[in-house]
Image 1: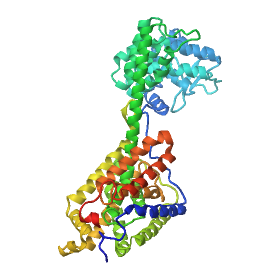
Image 2: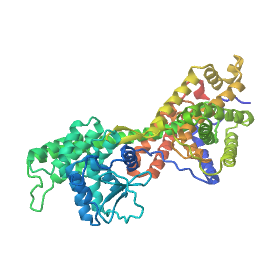
Image 3: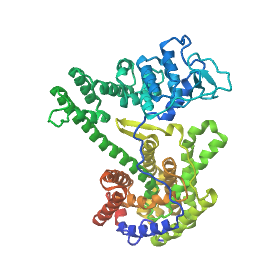
Image 4: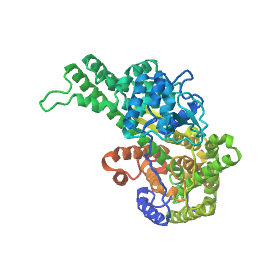
Length: 590
């Protein structure tokens, strides 16, 4: 058998890309389903959703006492609640605005019930609130349970003007809540729809608030109201505050101040305010430009990390062993399915430890895919080291067998892999730029895998023997190194690393029989571009491809950006066939 480190025609590895692309087209023709994969899906905001807000409302509401226990029908709050017992939407809207001006937090459960469709009134104009859990009725003023079963109930109208008045009033009453998610959600609403009567409460809340994000949102709400003030000093203070906050949502309001009417007069008469508005707009645009640049860079690194995880196992198998492994994508798939099985194992037997299943899946996927790789090497690959084209065809056949095996075992449809709680959510990098926790985890995990591979190849006896066998097989054998054993463990290690990539991919893409087909060509591109056999080259090429693609997408679109990147890689390989980092010494000659 010819040495693993020498094969005819390997001086220009770029020429095999055409063959690989052709095989990829044939593989795709066998696919029966296409996984949904979005390499750039990143959360842009981290504010609570409407469902979160309503859940917190239910958790904190006290159905036993809707209005304060000391309230009486003669009280001002009670009179405003009574005004909701009407079918006239203008009367309902007026009552809501009056409640906002009054600022009594006791009326908040009533307004929440109105928003959620749980507010009713009788023919005698009694206002009743339905409990969010058991639907029992209580008097909105006294909190007494309603025992009558044959009541004729009606609901106040819910029109768009009422909704526009209701949301900011609820937000106004929630900004003093003890729960940060409620305060932040209320501040988010008020930043867009504050009402002039709320200004004193907003100033009070802003002074007492300690959370930076909630402070920023309340500052925007205050500035939005103060921009309408008659005093130019107040308007100037508001514009300066907006300039400090650099809020994009206030950019149009500032630009409005700089516009001119039909007679050429500025809408903002004070020149100092206009100058401050100009500087604030420039500050906002500068922040937006920085945010876009950082956003593209972060998202590009995220895409590159995914490519790096997909390609790292191939960097060992193709880069060091010179085996064209067309079943590499299926090793990723096996790693993802192993994660699915570990998840189900924890659900069935260790539900209390479910949030830690992903940690257990890492060694499990490495072992399972490593064993599959060893079986592939012992049964097929070891007979084809001197015939790379036959290796390509053989591994292509293995990939089809593995895909069909997964269809038989798990079905043709995608399986559901749920991320643990600590692997969900998002991390805000700066205003307007957030990265989902799963993507951030993949970035960190990719560097962990790179460090693991580097330690394996440079700080272990196996790595020393691998490098010796790949550089000079006969000399290594003369020194007592078993080349066959090294071949087996090297292929198994490369397959195991591919399984680790499958663990990470299971958290960000759909897991199905065709999962690996989306990454096989990209993986070969990464390895060949970085330099065959060079781990650092794979890191640089993967991250470079991800960032370069992301920077192209806004101007060209995702599809054309992909085409341009592939074209650039092909041209680069024509100019520099050895890749970005060329091997030195005997390995380069071979």
